[in-house]
Length: 415
Image (cartoon, rainbow, N blue to C red; front, side, top):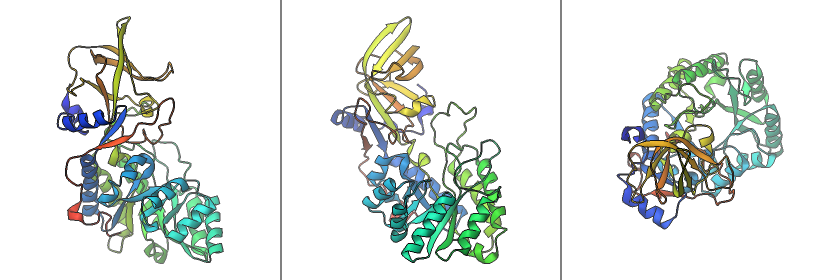
């Protein structure tokens, strides 16, 4: 086994005793998370932001992994909450986030959701003309002047147009901005530009920000000076394998994406006060830190193929249907199974014929061995239905020391 291939993920040799203790207490299938990797990713992003922008905030994308959100691990580092529904907004409030610690995105917010978010002082990024009309009506009924952000979109040369937000190139964004400027009950506090997920090329951030900056430079100076934040969303990659739909996959260090964003934004604000830069990472922060462990319950050979059944299922790690899994086999003492590989198929324990977790070359395994999926922290557990089996829980691999950041100072850029 090439250990360098797994360098971004929890080290099973280093943590063998801790992992065995957890899997003995909580029988697999189970997700296991390493706080230290999340903290390292957060610190790398924070250092890059400190070096390239004066005022910034990191908002953790709740939808990426709800169990991580509920743990408070990223909030302890200084992350605020990014949510995309009333359900997630209420979860953030239950977890203790004040309204000012929540960025409320998404294409569907009810009038009741908007009323609560306005009352709480949350940052609300409006997605479309109907929502803009709705929030103006809600603000009027509350007799307030509500600060809002507008989600805008720009074309990217290698992707189809996004259906989210107000398009800059066709004039929709300009019309929305002027509507807010003219409103007695709305105030334009920010712009939100979120590229699609799995963006591995920093040049796409440069391309998007260039269009955004040209749009901003057309504004009257007073309106530009009143802009409080630019929310660049996320899309930053982690170290899972590429999507089946992609021909190229080359995740770069997070600083390269930060530089691509800030170098362009600086063209608009260099020499004057700059708005807060908000980033909304999810995948980048949690994907590498989490593994999925299942146990082999059956092995037999058929037509020269090793057929393996584990007590996991594709419903538990659904992204195995969209990208090749990074999967390894381990003995019951968590030492790696090595030796000659052979054609192998790994099936989940459900009653579906298409419950196939892996097809390819794998060393000889036996019943009772563990299978470990690496790089599965993003989205798998969030979209995991209780189909046939309960949803696997997440447990942290503890290191005996509290995770902290910058000697306990806030990592939200003064937010």
